Amino acid sequence: MLKGIPRILSPELLKVLCEMGHTDELTIGDGNFPGHTYGKKVIRMDGHGIPEILDAILKVFPLDTYVEHPVTLMDVVAGDPVKTPIWEEYQEIVSKYDARGKDCFEKIDKWKFYEKTRDNSSVVIMTGETAQYANLILKKGVVMMDTD
Image 1 (cartoon, rainbow, N blue to C red):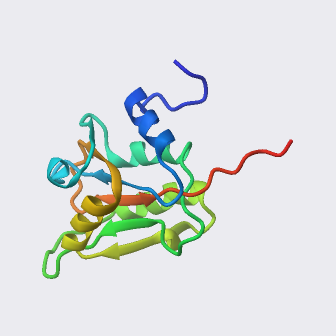
Image 2: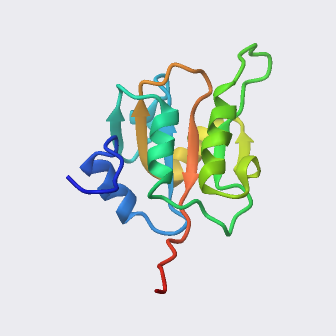
């Protein structure tokens, strides 16, 4: 065990997060996301929802400040009557760690989201999240060292 590390972050996930460099991406998928189809590596966190995982990750994982939108959401398919209140939760969580808050977010088409995951994500974290369109991609920023 380590001090200061959220308990929800497994050793396997911590290793991946640590190995990721600036501009690397990770996808957090809801319970319906086809992670094993699109992920190079998959870590299962079935007993957890995305908000708690997102909050834990952002405690140790900076978002990229060199891009306009370091967080990507899967947009709702046209004509689908689904509501996405979970996106507001994400904005609140991200706002705790990044001053840009809701401006960190972009939405892209479902199929582009799958392609982006396949082409760019170092890992897909599969969750037990039941909210629809809860998937998101995070782009890693630069870890700033204390100069003290």
